Image (cartoon, rainbow, N blue to C red):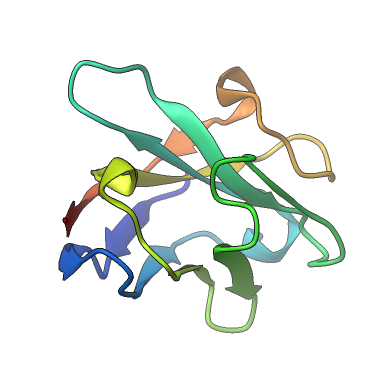
Length: 125
């Protein structure tokens, strides 16, 4: 069983930055692939970024590439998402998720087993 709790969301002006955190429970956090997804009102949940268990490889959605950075601290069991140059279209509820099977990063929502409750990010124009 894995529990995930996101934090760090809020209201920011376009061009600003936010850093999201996701605190995880579970002794084997360091072996899990982790990911960030987001869901805007009226839209499906979409992939944002993912990181392999070993922190060697990462993947990003084209819409955030070059602006967002995913990282993890396995000792603290925390996943991060640094978001820079935010745009109004980044407004959404952001969810962290863990993939307990496999070692490489993944953009497939169906491959993730546990999800946090989400944190709201609102970017004003």
